[in-house]
Length: 605
Image 1 (cartoon, rainbow, N blue to C red):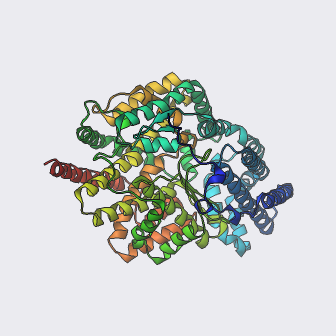
Image 2: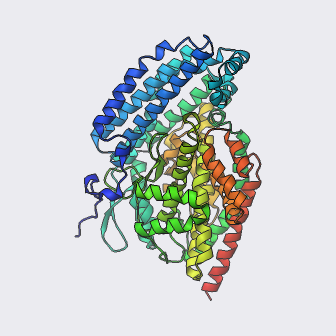
Image 3: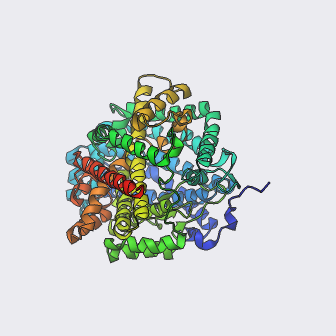
């Protein structure tokens, strides 16, 4: 029997395929020096407590201290979490990351006086400070956002208690992350070539695209066998985390955890409801796509392990990582030279950690802070999907770079609501590029299939998650125990509604809630769907070769937190308080589904 393929150990990965974290700290000793300096700085926090009412100069000094500590803290934390994520089994960096998280909690507790103390001042007094001290003017929007949430900030003693419980509130999420990324051992299965492969999160994603149905089925059942084994534990961790959201919302006088989560970015709850309503109104399109998938796969029964494999056999195009780098420059050319210059820096300066290794965090992301590069984590495989992932994460990193280089620190980040728009605009531009340049019907059909799958995964699937996330919070608020049995039952019902009668009701998919990290992120997932839909509108504007559209888009990338997210998007040309952009995205999906159906008819002749 052949030996199973094994992932490389971290120290076996070529340096040029790893990110260069020495740009943050030269080594761990430099990190320790910064860590100690920050601990020392935190000791001075009490000297600012109780001073915000002492005049504009004292107010400015406390505000600048707060921001200075936050800036240094973010750099320390980013280094520790990137080091940990590159190999979650490395106990040295587990400990480093844990210490950084503890320091974050300590800092939150030390600095928790600021907001309640600020809000103990009258509006008249606060804005008089701004008249008295011109140096405060840059912080006007920052302070406006705090004042806008006046009703939800607690007295300083209570804020300190909540801040001090930060690690406790995050315990369930941390437990899930360690189990999911480091402790779970997935079974060994055979791939298309009869070779034994160890299932991992990355390998699972690749095998679900396999054209060998038995491989897909074995991967699907093998993965979920592990989650089923730990179903009660995973229900407990998720339930505890949701209780935390509901508790925090309640003590801060919000009507719901959703209102609390969205209020941090001043997003109206109607944006969430519009999304769910429009998607549910258009579920017939997803059902129709599932019918086409069933027809093309020529299966009597369509299963959930059939929804990712290419419909027309093996992908007619694929990319090595080096080819993907070249393709990224070609695809993103419509974004202009200023944009491309940042893409070049990302590749030249080793912002990207490319390949999967033992213990590496699953998935992909862009992460960094004001004083670091916007690093990208990948788990690369030579597929079209991973080209899309590269371009997607590059969108995040360029967004971060432009924000950090065009805004002061206080506005040098952006909300999650805005983040997914930049990344999925890149994905839409890649799709358009491929459809404009590829004439082979099989390639076009594959790209259309990929787009429809991407839309399914980003709009339909994430809205399904958003519905379930809100359902869980609502049920917990009513006092319903979120047991594994309860979650399985209701997730299964939701999955049947979304995928329709063409899809078999696989018992394994009832467990899907147990493996979704984003359910620990607090009303995060809906923003993938709203972001993709807004990006659809923006990409069309950019590709129309209207230079003003590109200028507006670059302005959005450079705006950071200088205005409320909804207002930033209005300036970019999309009003997300309305449902038009969602309906327009559904029309694009329908048009491309129509084209794929016609191409299939031609190919079958």
